[in-house]
Length: 252
Image (tube, one colour):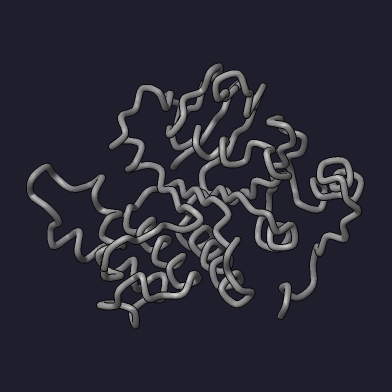
């Protein structure tokens, strides 16, 4: 069980306020899309949830425990973060990347155990990367690399999964593949998922709940059909947008 709460949270970078007066609760096993225009505070929200940046006011708690009272290792056992992409400056096999997810669980100076290796293998299988074992991760497509990062997060065995624009550089096939995997991890294994997305259609199709930010403030929270109503999309994004809300998956 992992319940996330943000109470009166503000985040500032110097004199610039990135988030203000934020009240948000994400229950265990929820699947939530974080939406908003550029500069709305979406990435700052993920950074304060993961403890990368401190809040300047308010409090973030996990299961009632203030995040500020947890060490980095304790946070890493509870929260896994999947970035947009990771540059790999040297050769590294797919299974070695996935094994990085076990670092928060390793005992000092003992390295990975047989149990760790088993979990890495299971994560690779769970994400469908069996055929990529032994390959240099740098040689994979962007979509395949994104799946490797998700497998690393699965191996981490955290109950809260944060994703920062996981489909932004992917073609349509890999977008659908990643979103299907997110929904499956949430539905079948009860992972709590919070994902920043730019694609409103993907958010409307795959997420039961959407959180809309604008100017660092929460301006919408609820079912996508409600949060992404045409008048709200117009007010937040400054455009008239026809948001796909149902039927077949986009492009299928």
